[in-house]
Image 1: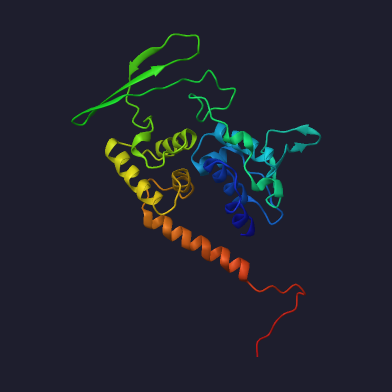
Image 2: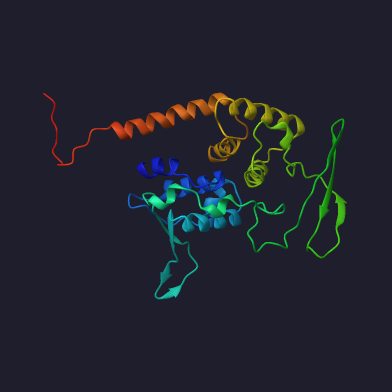
Length: 257
């Protein structure tokens, strides 16, 4: 429980990375040790395995997590890594400066080595109930584009002009993948409602990236501002209970009366 509170209060510089840290804290024992697989974290956070690997590597650079490859009989074995959380590390209180560097336009969920992944650009035009999406695919930077018509409702570019506080490209792509995994198409109507609610939450002091990260953490398909207020109240109550709980360092049993 204390690890979860520490994780919630730790600044990591990226909402999706915060989500991965919270999941590691949720799996960890009292010593901060856990060994979940990349696949299980990806499934629980509803993001890709490559995204999990990238964010764990950044958490390790920030000194928040130590990663140990588990071995059996002196030989590397195909099993999950062991993670040790170091949330009391004072160097982890500020985000890694590298995380503030702008990403390339094509960098979303892929790691630096995934430069040959398909680039998908969609253009949606609505005629009644029909969506005509144009998919442009580039398998290699030196290859020419080839186009085909395919319905990809979740590959929607971020309408930055509609947001009071636009989300970052990485968190937007993570959120689209979250919706895709839930088989929830982000239609134009759903997108407009989402933007309206996020803009309303911005006025109450919530950041857009934090809102979308909370939706992924809570496995929400959509959200209401009242949900955020309720979670904020519950979180503050939990922190207050832990910090104000009387301690008994001597280990004596206190009997009232």
